[in-house]
Length: 397
Image 1 (spheres, helix red, strand yellow):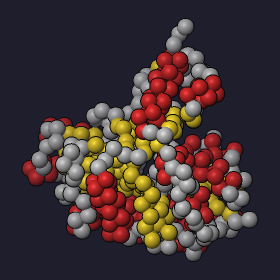
Image 2 (cartoon, one colour; image 1 turned 180 degrees about the horizontal axis):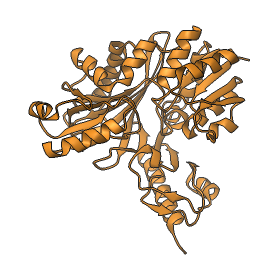
Image 3 (cartoon, helix red, strand yellow; image 1 turned 120 degrees about the vertical axis):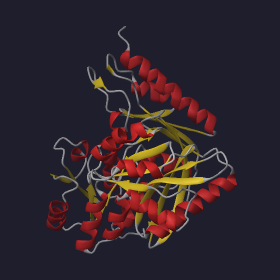
Protein backbone atom coordinates (compact mmCIF):
# COMPACT_ATOMS: atom_id res chain seq x y z
CA UNK A 1 0.00 0.00 0.00
CA UNK A 2 1.51 3.31 -1.08
CA UNK A 3 1.63 6.18 1.40
CA UNK A 4 0.59 9.73 0.53
CA UNK A 5 1.21 12.77 2.70
CA UNK A 6 -1.40 15.53 2.45
CA UNK A 7 -0.16 18.91 3.62
CA UNK A 8 -3.06 20.45 5.53
CA UNK A 9 -5.96 18.73 7.28
CA UNK A 10 -8.66 21.38 7.32
CA UNK A 11 -12.24 21.12 6.07
CA UNK A 12 -11.36 21.35 2.38
CA UNK A 13 -8.36 19.02 2.66
CA UNK A 14 -10.60 16.44 4.33
CA UNK A 15 -12.16 15.65 0.95
CA UNK A 16 -8.73 14.76 -0.45
CA UNK A 17 -7.99 12.57 2.56
CA UNK A 18 -11.28 10.69 2.11
CA UNK A 19 -10.64 10.21 -1.60
CA UNK A 20 -7.09 8.92 -1.02
CA UNK A 21 -8.37 6.39 1.49
CA UNK A 22 -11.14 5.29 -0.87
CA UNK A 23 -8.50 4.69 -3.55
CA UNK A 24 -6.65 2.35 -1.20
CA UNK A 25 -3.70 4.53 -0.21
CA UNK A 26 -2.39 4.91 3.31
CA UNK A 27 -3.11 8.53 4.18
CA UNK A 28 -0.94 10.74 6.35
CA UNK A 29 -1.52 14.41 7.07
CA UNK A 30 -0.02 17.34 8.96
CA UNK A 31 -1.57 20.56 10.22
CA UNK A 32 -0.74 23.12 12.88
CA UNK A 33 -4.25 22.89 14.31
CA UNK A 34 -4.45 20.00 16.80
CA UNK A 35 -8.22 19.88 16.21
CA UNK A 36 -8.04 19.77 12.39
CA UNK A 37 -11.02 17.79 11.08
CA UNK A 38 -8.86 15.77 8.70
CA UNK A 39 -6.93 14.14 11.53
CA UNK A 40 -9.90 11.91 12.36
CA UNK A 41 -10.04 10.72 8.73
CA UNK A 42 -6.36 10.00 8.03
CA UNK A 43 -4.54 6.80 8.93
CA UNK A 44 -1.80 8.84 10.61
CA UNK A 45 -1.31 12.48 11.46
CA UNK A 46 1.08 14.85 13.16
CA UNK A 47 0.54 18.35 14.55
CA UNK A 48 3.03 20.36 12.48
CA UNK A 49 2.65 23.77 10.89
CA UNK A 50 2.24 23.32 7.15
CA UNK A 51 4.75 26.11 6.48
CA UNK A 52 7.46 24.40 8.56
CA UNK A 53 9.28 22.74 5.68
CA UNK A 54 11.97 21.00 7.73
CA UNK A 55 9.58 19.54 10.31
CA UNK A 56 7.21 18.30 7.60
CA UNK A 57 10.15 16.79 5.70
CA UNK A 58 11.36 14.98 8.82
CA UNK A 59 7.89 13.48 9.29
CA UNK A 60 7.69 12.46 5.62
CA UNK A 61 11.08 10.79 5.82
CA UNK A 62 10.22 8.99 9.03
CA UNK A 63 7.06 7.60 7.43
CA UNK A 64 8.76 6.91 4.07
CA UNK A 65 5.92 8.39 2.05
CA UNK A 66 5.54 7.64 -1.67
CA UNK A 67 3.94 10.94 -2.59
CA UNK A 68 3.05 14.38 -1.25
CA UNK A 69 0.56 17.08 -2.21
CA UNK A 70 -1.38 20.00 -0.87
CA UNK A 71 -4.81 21.26 -1.89
CA UNK A 72 -7.13 24.25 -1.46
CA UNK A 73 -4.46 26.40 0.25
CA UNK A 74 -1.40 28.23 -1.02
CA UNK A 75 0.40 27.89 2.29
CA UNK A 76 1.33 24.24 1.77
CA UNK A 77 2.67 24.60 -1.79
CA UNK A 78 6.28 25.34 -0.88
CA UNK A 79 6.36 22.61 1.75
CA UNK A 80 5.01 19.97 -0.65
CA UNK A 81 7.54 21.01 -3.30
CA UNK A 82 10.37 20.95 -0.75
CA UNK A 83 9.52 17.44 0.42
CA UNK A 84 9.21 16.23 -3.18
CA UNK A 85 12.63 17.64 -4.03
CA UNK A 86 14.42 16.33 -0.95
CA UNK A 87 12.87 12.84 -1.17
CA UNK A 88 13.05 12.61 -4.99
CA UNK A 89 9.28 12.27 -5.31
CA UNK A 90 7.03 13.58 -8.05
CA UNK A 91 6.20 17.20 -7.45
CA UNK A 92 6.42 20.81 -8.50
CA UNK A 93 9.93 22.21 -8.87
CA UNK A 94 10.75 24.11 -5.66
CA UNK A 95 12.00 27.24 -7.42
CA UNK A 96 8.85 27.32 -9.55
CA UNK A 97 6.81 26.99 -6.35
CA UNK A 98 8.66 30.00 -4.92
CA UNK A 99 7.89 31.98 -8.06
CA UNK A 100 4.19 31.11 -7.94
CA UNK A 101 3.99 32.30 -4.34
CA UNK A 102 4.93 35.83 -5.41
CA UNK A 103 1.98 37.38 -7.23
CA UNK A 104 4.02 40.30 -8.51
CA UNK A 105 6.74 38.11 -10.04
CA UNK A 106 4.04 35.98 -11.65
CA UNK A 107 2.35 39.07 -13.09
CA UNK A 108 5.70 40.37 -14.38
CA UNK A 109 6.47 37.04 -16.08
CA UNK A 110 3.03 36.87 -17.70
CA UNK A 111 3.28 40.48 -18.85
CA UNK A 112 6.69 40.00 -20.43
CA UNK A 113 5.42 36.93 -22.32
CA UNK A 114 2.19 38.70 -23.37
CA UNK A 115 0.17 35.76 -22.04
CA UNK A 116 -2.99 37.79 -21.42
CA UNK A 117 -4.28 41.35 -21.78
CA UNK A 118 -3.16 42.72 -18.39
CA UNK A 119 -0.76 45.62 -17.91
CA UNK A 120 2.29 45.48 -15.67
CA UNK A 121 1.89 45.81 -11.89
CA UNK A 122 3.89 47.21 -8.96
CA UNK A 123 5.33 45.40 -5.95
CA UNK A 124 5.58 47.23 -2.63
CA UNK A 125 6.82 46.61 0.91
CA UNK A 126 6.91 48.59 4.14
CA UNK A 127 9.79 50.74 2.81
CA UNK A 128 8.18 51.65 -0.51
CA UNK A 129 7.64 55.34 -1.27
CA UNK A 130 3.91 55.24 -1.96
CA UNK A 131 3.86 58.87 -3.06
CA UNK A 132 6.24 58.00 -5.89
CA UNK A 133 4.19 54.93 -6.80
CA UNK A 134 1.01 57.01 -6.88
CA UNK A 135 2.44 59.19 -9.63
CA UNK A 136 2.68 56.16 -11.90
CA UNK A 137 -0.81 54.86 -11.12
CA UNK A 138 -4.09 55.40 -12.89
CA UNK A 139 -6.95 54.78 -10.46
CA UNK A 140 -8.87 52.64 -9.69
CA UNK A 141 -6.35 49.93 -8.81
CA UNK A 142 -6.46 46.56 -7.07
CA UNK A 143 -4.22 46.00 -4.04
CA UNK A 144 -3.56 42.47 -2.78
CA UNK A 145 -0.93 40.47 -0.84
CA UNK A 146 1.97 39.06 -2.84
CA UNK A 147 1.22 35.68 -1.23
CA UNK A 148 -1.74 34.03 0.44
CA UNK A 149 -5.15 32.92 -0.76
CA UNK A 150 -8.86 33.30 -0.15
CA UNK A 151 -9.07 37.02 -1.06
CA UNK A 152 -7.68 38.03 2.33
CA UNK A 153 -6.20 41.52 2.25
CA UNK A 154 -7.40 42.32 -1.28
CA UNK A 155 -9.27 45.55 -1.95
CA UNK A 156 -10.11 48.09 -4.62
CA UNK A 157 -8.66 51.59 -4.29
CA UNK A 158 -10.39 54.43 -6.10
CA UNK A 159 -8.18 57.36 -5.14
CA UNK A 160 -4.70 58.12 -3.83
CA UNK A 161 -5.90 58.95 -0.31
CA UNK A 162 -7.06 55.32 0.16
CA UNK A 163 -3.84 53.68 -1.05
CA UNK A 164 -1.80 53.65 2.17
CA UNK A 165 -4.53 51.96 4.22
CA UNK A 166 -5.17 49.37 1.51
CA UNK A 167 -1.46 48.58 1.22
CA UNK A 168 -1.13 48.22 4.99
CA UNK A 169 -4.09 45.81 5.02
CA UNK A 170 -2.65 43.77 2.14
CA UNK A 171 0.82 43.56 3.67
CA UNK A 172 -0.69 42.48 7.00
CA UNK A 173 -2.26 39.51 5.17
CA UNK A 174 1.07 38.56 3.54
CA UNK A 175 3.60 36.22 5.12
CA UNK A 176 6.40 38.19 3.47
CA UNK A 177 4.81 41.59 4.25
CA UNK A 178 4.65 42.54 0.56
CA UNK A 179 1.77 43.64 -1.64
CA UNK A 180 1.01 44.09 -5.32
CA UNK A 181 -0.78 46.99 -6.99
CA UNK A 182 -2.27 46.45 -10.44
CA UNK A 183 -4.80 48.06 -12.72
CA UNK A 184 -8.39 47.46 -11.66
CA UNK A 185 -10.21 45.51 -14.37
CA UNK A 186 -13.95 45.80 -14.95
CA UNK A 187 -15.14 42.35 -15.92
CA UNK A 188 -16.69 39.10 -14.71
CA UNK A 189 -14.59 36.64 -12.78
CA UNK A 190 -14.03 33.08 -13.95
CA UNK A 191 -11.91 30.22 -12.68
CA UNK A 192 -9.83 27.57 -14.41
CA UNK A 193 -8.59 24.23 -13.14
CA UNK A 194 -5.76 22.27 -14.76
CA UNK A 195 -3.69 19.17 -14.13
CA UNK A 196 -0.17 18.82 -15.51
CA UNK A 197 0.79 15.16 -16.00
CA UNK A 198 4.27 14.23 -17.19
CA UNK A 199 4.68 17.78 -18.45
CA UNK A 200 1.46 17.66 -20.49
CA UNK A 201 -1.06 20.38 -19.66
CA UNK A 202 -4.70 19.37 -19.29
CA UNK A 203 -7.02 22.37 -18.85
CA UNK A 204 -9.88 20.50 -17.20
CA UNK A 205 -12.43 23.28 -17.19
CA UNK A 206 -13.35 26.97 -17.10
CA UNK A 207 -15.79 27.90 -14.33
CA UNK A 208 -18.24 30.75 -13.93
CA UNK A 209 -17.90 32.50 -10.56
CA UNK A 210 -19.98 34.69 -8.26
CA UNK A 211 -18.17 37.18 -6.03
CA UNK A 212 -19.01 39.51 -3.15
CA UNK A 213 -19.36 43.22 -3.83
CA UNK A 214 -16.35 45.53 -3.24
CA UNK A 215 -14.18 45.87 -1.30
CA UNK A 216 -13.64 42.19 -0.42
CA UNK A 217 -14.02 40.20 -3.67
CA UNK A 218 -14.54 36.82 -2.02
CA UNK A 219 -16.02 33.83 -3.82
CA UNK A 220 -19.71 33.05 -3.39
CA UNK A 221 -20.07 30.15 -5.80
CA UNK A 222 -19.07 28.42 -9.04
CA UNK A 223 -20.85 26.91 -12.00
CA UNK A 224 -20.14 24.80 -15.08
CA UNK A 225 -20.61 25.13 -17.97
CA UNK A 226 -19.91 28.85 -18.31
CA UNK A 227 -21.95 31.50 -20.06
CA UNK A 228 -19.02 32.53 -22.28
CA UNK A 229 -19.11 32.50 -26.09
CA UNK A 230 -17.21 29.47 -27.39
CA UNK A 231 -14.44 31.54 -28.94
CA UNK A 232 -13.82 33.46 -25.70
CA UNK A 233 -13.75 30.29 -23.60
CA UNK A 234 -11.34 28.67 -26.05
CA UNK A 235 -9.05 31.70 -25.82
CA UNK A 236 -9.27 31.55 -22.01
CA UNK A 237 -8.17 27.92 -22.13
CA UNK A 238 -5.23 28.87 -24.32
CA UNK A 239 -4.25 31.71 -21.95
CA UNK A 240 -4.32 29.26 -19.05
CA UNK A 241 -2.12 26.75 -20.90
CA UNK A 242 0.31 29.49 -21.98
CA UNK A 243 0.57 30.81 -18.44
CA UNK A 244 1.40 27.34 -17.12
CA UNK A 245 4.13 26.96 -19.76
CA UNK A 246 5.62 30.41 -19.16
CA UNK A 247 5.76 29.86 -15.39
CA UNK A 248 7.41 26.46 -15.77
CA UNK A 249 4.73 24.48 -13.96
CA UNK A 250 5.30 20.89 -15.05
CA UNK A 251 3.63 18.83 -12.34
CA UNK A 252 0.30 18.70 -10.54
CA UNK A 253 -2.74 20.88 -10.09
CA UNK A 254 -3.06 24.51 -11.10
CA UNK A 255 -5.90 26.81 -10.07
CA UNK A 256 -6.39 30.18 -11.79
CA UNK A 257 -8.73 33.14 -11.49
CA UNK A 258 -9.30 35.52 -14.37
CA UNK A 259 -11.40 38.54 -15.25
CA UNK A 260 -13.01 38.59 -18.69
CA UNK A 261 -14.32 41.91 -19.97
CA UNK A 262 -17.44 42.49 -22.04
CA UNK A 263 -15.13 42.87 -25.04
CA UNK A 264 -13.62 39.44 -24.44
CA UNK A 265 -10.27 40.60 -23.05
CA UNK A 266 -8.75 38.13 -20.60
CA UNK A 267 -6.86 39.11 -17.45
CA UNK A 268 -5.33 36.41 -15.24
CA UNK A 269 -5.52 37.75 -11.69
CA UNK A 270 -4.36 34.86 -9.52
CA UNK A 271 -2.59 31.51 -9.86
CA UNK A 272 -2.22 28.74 -7.30
CA UNK A 273 -0.04 25.70 -7.88
CA UNK A 274 -2.54 23.40 -6.16
CA UNK A 275 -6.13 22.23 -6.44
CA UNK A 276 -8.70 25.01 -5.98
CA UNK A 277 -10.85 25.29 -2.89
CA UNK A 278 -14.57 25.85 -2.45
CA UNK A 279 -15.59 22.37 -3.64
CA UNK A 280 -13.84 22.68 -7.01
CA UNK A 281 -12.01 19.38 -6.56
CA UNK A 282 -14.71 17.25 -4.94
CA UNK A 283 -17.69 18.50 -6.95
CA UNK A 284 -17.40 21.29 -9.53
CA UNK A 285 -14.81 19.72 -11.85
CA UNK A 286 -15.91 16.06 -11.54
CA UNK A 287 -19.61 16.91 -12.01
CA UNK A 288 -19.06 19.57 -14.66
CA UNK A 289 -16.49 17.65 -16.73
CA UNK A 290 -17.04 14.00 -15.84
CA UNK A 291 -13.36 13.67 -14.86
CA UNK A 292 -12.49 12.35 -11.39
CA UNK A 293 -10.12 15.21 -10.68
CA UNK A 294 -9.03 14.37 -7.14
CA UNK A 295 -8.46 10.69 -7.93
CA UNK A 296 -6.15 11.60 -10.80
CA UNK A 297 -4.36 14.27 -8.77
CA UNK A 298 -3.68 11.73 -5.99
CA UNK A 299 -2.61 8.93 -8.33
CA UNK A 300 -0.26 11.28 -10.14
CA UNK A 301 1.34 12.39 -6.85
CA UNK A 302 2.35 8.80 -5.99
CA UNK A 303 3.43 7.91 -9.51
CA UNK A 304 0.42 5.83 -10.54
CA UNK A 305 -1.34 6.02 -13.90
CA UNK A 306 -4.10 8.58 -14.43
CA UNK A 307 -7.26 8.46 -16.54
CA UNK A 308 -8.72 11.80 -17.67
CA UNK A 309 -11.48 10.28 -19.78
CA UNK A 310 -14.73 12.20 -19.10
CA UNK A 311 -17.87 10.35 -18.05
CA UNK A 312 -21.42 11.80 -18.02
CA UNK A 313 -20.82 15.50 -17.23
CA UNK A 314 -23.76 17.69 -16.20
CA UNK A 315 -24.52 21.25 -15.16
CA UNK A 316 -23.34 22.05 -11.64
CA UNK A 317 -23.68 25.13 -9.43
CA UNK A 318 -22.40 25.80 -5.92
CA UNK A 319 -23.13 28.43 -3.31
CA UNK A 320 -21.11 29.14 -0.19
CA UNK A 321 -22.99 29.24 3.08
CA UNK A 322 -22.14 32.91 3.48
CA UNK A 323 -24.13 35.03 5.92
CA UNK A 324 -24.12 38.30 7.84
CA UNK A 325 -23.23 38.61 11.51
CA UNK A 326 -25.45 36.49 13.72
CA UNK A 327 -25.89 33.50 15.99
CA UNK A 328 -27.18 30.12 14.83
CA UNK A 329 -30.57 29.77 16.52
CA UNK A 330 -31.81 26.62 14.79
CA UNK A 331 -30.40 24.03 12.41
CA UNK A 332 -32.49 22.87 9.45
CA UNK A 333 -33.09 19.24 8.61
CA UNK A 334 -30.19 19.02 6.17
CA UNK A 335 -30.97 15.45 5.14
CA UNK A 336 -34.56 16.33 4.26
CA UNK A 337 -33.47 19.38 2.27
CA UNK A 338 -30.90 17.37 0.34
CA UNK A 339 -33.55 14.84 -0.68
CA UNK A 340 -36.27 17.38 -1.45
CA UNK A 341 -34.12 19.67 -3.59
CA UNK A 342 -31.68 17.01 -4.85
CA UNK A 343 -28.62 18.86 -3.64
CA UNK A 344 -25.57 18.15 -1.50
CA UNK A 345 -24.91 20.22 1.63
CA UNK A 346 -21.52 20.35 3.35
CA UNK A 347 -21.39 22.48 6.48
CA UNK A 348 -19.75 23.15 9.82
CA UNK A 349 -22.65 24.88 11.56
CA UNK A 350 -23.63 24.26 15.18
CA UNK A 351 -26.31 25.57 17.54
CA UNK A 352 -25.19 28.71 19.34
CA UNK A 353 -22.36 29.29 16.89
CA UNK A 354 -21.46 32.91 16.22
CA UNK A 355 -21.31 33.57 12.49
CA UNK A 356 -19.26 36.43 11.12
CA UNK A 357 -20.27 38.54 8.14
CA UNK A 358 -18.78 37.00 5.03
CA UNK A 359 -15.70 38.93 3.90
CA UNK A 360 -13.25 36.12 3.04
CA UNK A 361 -13.46 32.37 2.56
CA UNK A 362 -12.58 31.92 6.23
CA UNK A 363 -15.99 33.35 7.11
CA UNK A 364 -17.88 30.70 5.12
CA UNK A 365 -19.81 27.96 6.89
CA UNK A 366 -20.04 25.36 4.13
CA UNK A 367 -21.46 24.77 0.67
CA UNK A 368 -24.56 23.87 -1.31
CA UNK A 369 -23.89 21.84 -4.46
CA UNK A 370 -26.62 21.37 -7.08
CA UNK A 371 -26.61 19.29 -10.25
CA UNK A 372 -29.09 19.39 -13.11
CA UNK A 373 -29.45 18.85 -16.84
CA UNK A 374 -29.33 22.62 -17.45
CA UNK A 375 -27.52 25.49 -15.78
CA UNK A 376 -30.62 27.53 -14.90
CA UNK A 377 -32.06 24.68 -12.84
CA UNK A 378 -28.78 24.00 -11.06
CA UNK A 379 -28.37 27.67 -10.10
CA UNK A 380 -32.01 27.92 -8.97
CA UNK A 381 -31.69 24.89 -6.70
CA UNK A 382 -28.45 26.09 -5.12
CA UNK A 383 -29.76 29.60 -4.46
CA UNK A 384 -33.12 28.38 -3.15
CA UNK A 385 -31.47 26.06 -0.64
CA UNK A 386 -29.02 28.76 0.45
CA UNK A 387 -31.91 31.14 1.26
CA UNK A 388 -33.77 28.38 3.10
CA UNK A 389 -30.76 27.61 5.30
CA UNK A 390 -30.12 31.27 5.98
CA UNK A 391 -33.73 31.86 7.02
CA UNK A 392 -33.73 28.80 9.27
CA UNK A 393 -30.49 29.26 11.21
CA UNK A 394 -31.13 32.87 12.23
CA UNK A 395 -34.81 32.55 13.12
CA UNK A 396 -35.92 33.00 16.73
CA UNK A 397 -39.27 31.20 16.25
